[in-house]
Image 1: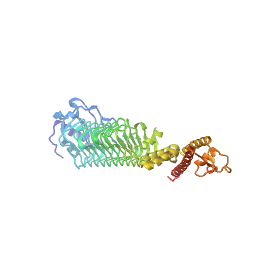
Image 2: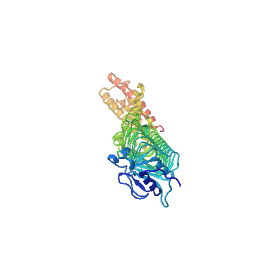
Image 3: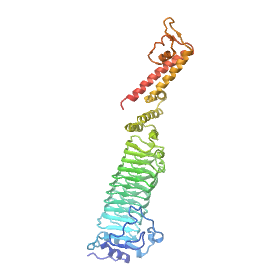
Image 4: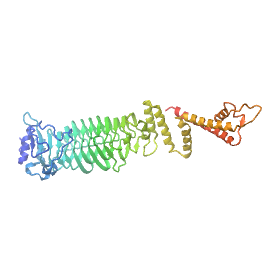
Length: 515
């Protein structure tokens, strides 16, 4: 039998309670201490459904725990000894460390070990960071606590890790960690001087992960992580001005991502290459805070993207080369700078159907044809041929602004005469105006016949019609010769006729070519 170490009165309580998993309360905590066995206590303020708790005031606040006396102090070595098997479980009980309102001195460190008991600390103050790197353990709950950091890179948790309601004044490191039941950071406050306040790259969460109402100063890194449930960021505030508030490149979420209900990001939200098999909802506030992008979501795959922020996103939004099943947004919150080149979507939802053409032309780097082509294709699938034609026309007009003088002049001519072939009725309008002008002019100033004995009766309508057609139809053009200013009018009608014919052919060729 292992020798019992020298223990203080507070430590002796914990030592004796461990075999049955009974909760030891050394001081008041929010909601009051649990008094029952391992299953007692009900939902705590660290439960993810509550979003954390309100901190205790005065000297009972965990942040002020360094002033607590010996009656509330437990050495970290005592806790690690119990977790590593210093005492056996009582018959018919599940042993666990459950401690409330304590100051924990020394380093709570288990590196590379195997822990077969739950660790449940609530309302505690830890003097030093928790070190669980490479450890295999059962559930770890550090709720409503104050601690200077946590290192759990590569840890395997047969249960969940909860820091809900806690205040962490250092980095939380969870790279390559694996959690069978979940990761709970509801209401957690993390402030770090490092580049990342929460560093959890390549993390795997078999259930959901929640940062609901979390307040994090410093970047959140989830690059390459996998969440096999929902990722909940409702009400969370992520601050990293000048950097990445959230970096979740290549992240995979099998459920939904919720950046809603007061979610605020000060800094870039980057989800490049992420895959979300549910709904990715953004209805909070995103501000670039001196970063090149506010929302960098290129090369992403999402079943449904709900992009209706509380206010227009301040900064560039990049959706380039992403694949989205259903995109829901609101024209009132469209950003001024929007990169859509390569974006592919199956459906568009929300208001502003007729305003989408402007939406497709907001690339800060200038004209890109693909967003117009994709939008026109969607209009066609949706049965709206008129808007599809308007989109193609807008694309050609936008392209014209990038071309040289000659092409701009020719493009303007095609636009005015036939709308680049998408408005062929314009040619009919021009033809009718020119025909009316010629008819009136030549009726008032008839031309002289070239062969008076052979000339037919002069008809100003037929003569003007012949001038406008590349090939005469009524034989009037060859029989009469206008003089004076009407001769210039005749030349102008001939030139205009050729221009209209050429524009019609060019436009028809553009419209009818295979897409």
